[in-house]
Amino acid sequence: MITFEGATKRHPDGTVAVEGLDLDVPAGRITVLVGPSGCGKTTLLRMVNRMVEPTSGRVLLNGEDVASLPAARLRRGIGYVIQQAGLFPHRRVLDNIATVPRLLGRDRRTARARAAELLELVGLPPETSRRYPFQLSGGQQQRVGVARALAADPPVLLMDEPFSAVDPVVRAGLQEELLRLQSELNKTVLFVTHDIEEAVRLGDQVVVLREHGRIAQCADPHTLLTAPADDGVAAFLGRDRGLRGLGLRPATAVALLPVGTDLHGWRLAVDAGGRPTAWEGNGERRPAPVFAPAADSLRSALDAAVLSPAGAAVAVDGYGRATGLATRAAVLAALGPAVPEPAAGEHTVDGPTVEEPAGGR
Image 1 (cartoon, rainbow, N blue to C red):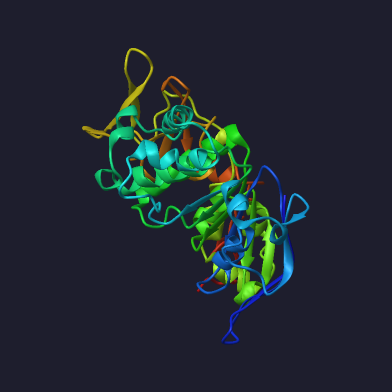
Image 2 (cartoon, rainbow, N blue to C red):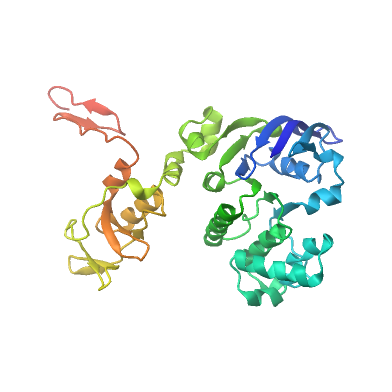
């Protein structure tokens, strides 16, 4: 566990980066620090590995004050991933990853063998090991950065906006990779981002910071989105926080219609193995967006339903076979209790029910 006790950082010019922060970072979980630029996120992160020394207060690692530990030894036991990966340009990928094990005294062969294992773990092919960083894409470089941070099997991983410099598609893939790795390795991860969507996707605990590192709210993602502490947190989360909440709910609760159901003149075509091929109707064939209830969120199901010409997403099993159809209404109904239909003479405006005035308009 990482513990901040009254952690404060004042710069020589009098600027206060962080003031009196108290925070527990649970072991084996991902804690995300999020907030506007200049709120002290990176300063807090760097206090853990003593790249920034607190002016007052303490930072404890498993109950031990990090200030009492030699900085070099402390840092070798903590994984650190930054933007642009921070790789050594003159070293091949394998030797980049093997850097910390070599510093810890492991022989070259052992360190390189460990590096090769980690390349596979982060999803890079073996031939990547012989390349230099400039020969890799941005996403590949970030994967190498994660592998290097894991090379000495540290219990703690610090990640400072590691995916912000890559495009959205690569970023989503890297986020998924981090979640996969964490499910296997159970590291204590302290992650900094300015992106609230990334924060709620990755974090077991999300800490929203204000100026000077003051905590506005510390909660799990669902609580954060559904019960923001105040108007300031709600504004930071954005007006679409309800949609983000869809991404936290599993799609297993969606009620499915039979695959052969006719929807507004559209029927699903499947191949001999039962896998969806297209929506057919009105003399057209259109793509059939799918989702996997066992793996995807309600947001994925809703996205697929919105993109479907029939207004329904196709649910598939682990083999890609169609198991049912999820209409938009069914996806929204899975969020909670159904909203009753308005009675005759009533209509709805933005949700609330309004009675039609006598005599009409």
